[in-house]
Image (cartoon, chains in turn blue, green):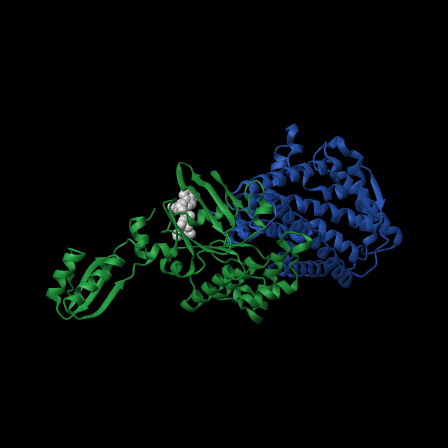
Amino acid sequence: MLNLILNENMKIYRRIRTWILVILLFLIILGAAILVYTHLPQKDPNWRVTLQQSIVQNNKIIQQGSKSGVPANMISQLKIQNAQNQYQLSHNMANPLTGWQFSSEFIMTGGNFLLIVFVAIVAGDIVASEFSQGTIKLLLTRPRTRYEILLSKFLALVIFSFFLTLCSVTLSILIGFIFFGTNGYSIPTLIVTSGGNIASVSLISFFLMIYGLNTITVIAIASIAFMISTIFRSSAVAIAISLITLFVGSTISSLLQSYSWDKYLIFSNLGIAGYLTSGPTLPGLTLTFSLIVLFVYVVVMIALSLWIFKRRDVALT
Amino acid sequence: MELQTVISLRDLTKKIGKKTIVDHLSFDIHQGEVFGFLGPNGAGKTTTIRMMVGLISISEGQVLIHGKNIRTDFKNAIANVGCIVENPEMYKYLTGYQNLKHMARMAKVDAGNQIDEKRISEVVDLVGLGKRIHDKVSKYSLGMRQRLGVAQALLHRPSILILDEPTNGLDPAGIRELRDQLRYLAKEEKMAVIVSSHLLSEMELMCDRVAIIAQGKLVQVQTVGQMIDSEQEQQSMSIEVNDVGEALTIIQRTCDANASQSAEVKNTIQFAATKEQVATVIEALVKQEIRVYRVNAQRKTLEDRFLEITGGGEIA
Ligand SMILES: Nc1ncnc2c1ncn2[C@@H]1O[C@H](COP(=O)(O)OP(=O)(O)OP(=O)(O)O)[C@@H](O)[C@H]1O
Ligand SMILES: [Mg+2]
């Protein structure tokens, strides 16, 4: 099995396409940094007043709270914002954005979608391209079961998800350091706990959590692309369907909010990294619940892919 | 010499819907022979090969490779086989060498049959790819891809080599080289080599035995020698003499009443005769003091037999 995974890795990393994706990732992070840098609020002399005002306003909303129908995750966000503003005031920091914050902001706002799209491109192609190139015959006429062949492809895909995540962390931290400096390691990072309270965690564990959870979302979407790729043997269809799931999914989920089974849909459970920064999107969702739901979906999709791949007549079109 | 059977087909059948594409094929293939599947387009050759290597399911019957059933004991059965099904497709964005490395990693893992770098350069030398092995496959010509295909099929030292239409697209020199190579592998390396083709003259030169398949059914299995000249069979002859009139009477009397004077070649008579009858005719002519300048046998090729057997160029 290890040999098969080595093969799949060779086929991923020896392809120019993979490195184009990495370069694209680099360019987009660079572009984001330039954009943020040029739009930094320029030395507001009254920044202390502005922050204090915003704290007062936020507190008002928090106090009215659930009575006035403000969603729970909004309130959590405001609480975090207040705590951060407070920290800024007491440490006399006019500008809170540093290289570290740039990296975590990047992955929470856009970078996550980027990783998903890139991994889906590879996932949608990994089975389909063997069929379109005819090389599937090389794989299936050697002493390996079809289960082994397909599983090695899936595992290579999981490894690729981590690889791309790692690229993204390193690149965004490095570029962040260059543009926004290396300070800020000690700025408290705050997360929403499962009870809805605010807790402070170390920067390292914060990074591990948001990037880790995001990778799980990436793998879940990649599994959709992988399954479609196996069933329809078309990378275009696989990539399209998995990305539609990603972009239309959250809308479908909120449209179906009134049904009790809404939370069991895969769409409702994809935003797990966001649970840390602003809490769950639907009442009744918890991080553990979503992780279990995603795990079950992935297992079912891979099992279905295996079942179909095992029975497929190769050729006779 | 005892012939060891390496592959047996037993009532091998493929049905798709109501259509039977391969219909109860049964025959054995032996060690050390080049065995041909011969049939017109759509006869079911590729379908048969795909079943033999486990690419498609078998509707009925079985394929035994060294006694192991391809369906129930796939890993052990297929470990003996190297194959190219239809075109030699490889990963174009990898080099030839990386492709071989990929195939080496797919081989059966056991201590006795390690495929190391030495083995890879051995097969590269055998197929004559030389330095080009480090080029990307996207830069290869069809002939080079065919060589790489043969290299990957031989990599794990299989006892059986299966090639579907191996001469497709090769130039005459390439065909000749491949043919010599396949004959070498069968004779010297004692492999069983299975090829399919509709290039009939090609099979005649390449194969020891041929299975003729038409519309999914086995028509017959024969050695190439048997097919070309069988003792009892009449061949068409032409004979050049000084006295056509006299000779024609003698030939019509002694063997072929339908003998006739050739319209195209002067002083030549055409007739049909078996080997023995030819001797009788010549003896009779010489006795009558007719001078015989030339006797030609229009040797029947596999092609004639093939068209005869399959009923012409009808496509299934
Ligand atoms: N999916 C399918 N459904 C029904 N019939 C099919 C299917 N695929 C192939 N066939 C039929 O199976 C028959 C055998 O095809 P096969 O490719 O085995 O022939 P072949 O002998 O290899 O021909 P060729 O010399 O053209 O390569 C053909 O008549 C073809 O039309
Ligand atoms: Mg064919």
